[in-house]
Length: 367
Image (cartoon, rainbow, N blue to C red):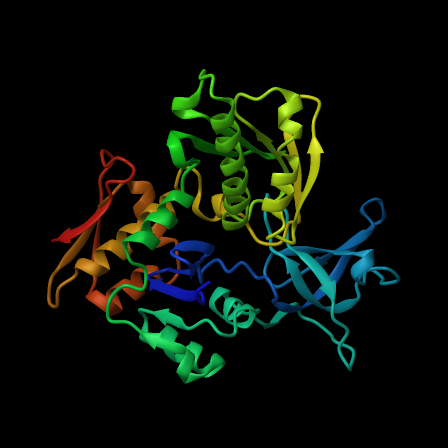
């Protein structure tokens, strides 16, 4: 097995990071400096309210943010109004604030609420997890920052985009609900507020009599489903519906699902439901990609993608404009630093709101 490669693609308003191993995507992260995920951040916060029914307490953080500190992570015995030093152990997601853990300092702390330090971003986390993996980035500023943290010899600066067509295609697939399977089948992945539903579609095998082919397709689907769960940072309750198999034969595939899940320490296979669905549970740590990107893609995601594509096509001295829907233009104006970063690299960008511009057709062009 070849050593993995950490790829860091920096563009206005966004940093995308890929762990590329043996010709395929093994980990994926999308981070936006204007809306940091916050995992690993260290804060001083104020215990606002005890929540005995939830076995914890709510802690006011800097700004209007509120985190939850479980009793098992340090809230037990603490009183309302107390100032605490806490670390974010689970990113805000699903409309809920971050999960916290107490980090007692040597000396007592006092207010106001404030951020003490940021946790490592995705390239630094991957660099620590894979100490032999080189890092490749297309941003001089990112290269300088990473070299200072992990050493000059591990970081390479590329004149070409860090993501080639294969990596871009893999990230594009993660932004949608469907994943192609070998042999014409597909996975359909649908997060809901209560759970994540994954359906296996047999494609051309549907209705066929080749039982061995059906089993092979479903086995391949199980391994791809486990991979997609990890890549997309899906969590909580997960149900997977296999294609065209009676319950007795579905039970025979449970060991394969256990094997597929073994690569992910956060994923547990619980068994089959009464309807024959594979029931899983994954620990919540990171914000899922569908919340970061939107599904379908949010106006901000479409706008940042247009900036990224436009930056690659920009020529010195050219006057540029972005034609996009009013929602996309508004999202970019509300994303601190994105338009400024584009202007610094390619010159000022005029926004041309067009109510008739369909999603996915946003583009940067000569003004």
